[in-house]
Length: 418
Image 1 (cartoon, rainbow, N blue to C red):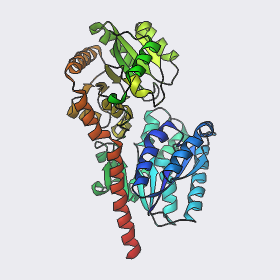
Image 2: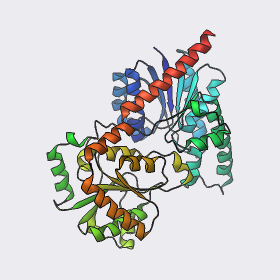
Image 3: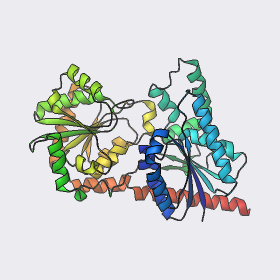
């Protein structure tokens, strides 16, 4: 049995860890890999969910080695965490030889580069997006601040090193590959790059498994009438998303569908969104705010006629794969989204499952509204779901990682025996 060390700066108790890490690793464990995880856990979430995560790991024979995420002070806290992750990894190397270190994103990969000087393993760089540029595009790092400017330059050097020293690279989108080659200044990377979009559990997001009693319960709870047309938004309203532009489209949409309501499914505070709606002139009685745990989400989404999401079209978003797209299409729900987000344009056009908004203005909002209404009338929900399974199924994702692992292990075994 081959040993895999998975390092993640996202916690397994974080939503990302639960939806985008553990399902893959559980599937890979079933393929016969002995998996160990090092992850940085937020203390408050770890206390609440550690037993639940540990149970999942135990069931799938996964060894979990959490460290506490350090929040303050900025910058120094990250350095502290890198040291803690490195110490944890070295301790694990004392008891077993790892064939592969699978690193999620950039901070984890800093540790892998450190360890590669001493230990013999294959380095899988699972980049998850252009992290350095995301920090700038998301206004998290202000480059006018000399400290952030230094960090930016340092991490851009490291980024090039990750691409060139990785034994294999996983990216979320095809359109990001030319940029990867450009950053690495290496055109010969194609044979060691695999595209795996953010996958979803299509068995969970399945309309046929939703109970009508649960749907009726949501209707009653949210005061949704049988003739209401539900346009839905799912997820965060901050950083990368464009709530004002979504509200303005909804306002135009109501001209065509006066009984439309905008269902916003989010855990974030609704007050800023409501103030924005008042300023724009969106009737507040047409807005519905709610949140849902993962188990209830399919029944809640079953209320929706169509869905909407606009993401800030920054440079770094060419490497983005919105998880919500796979979840919505798996439920047979058509989408309106803006252009320039990873491979989303290609996926929606090829699956005929939505409308691409090409600019943020009233004329384009009107076009999108008309086209999505026409599409919804003729949409084959089963065909949409079939395309979602083809593009986003967790099983396909696990099989892709399995193929990469096999390739890297064969390469490592060849080195050992040569």
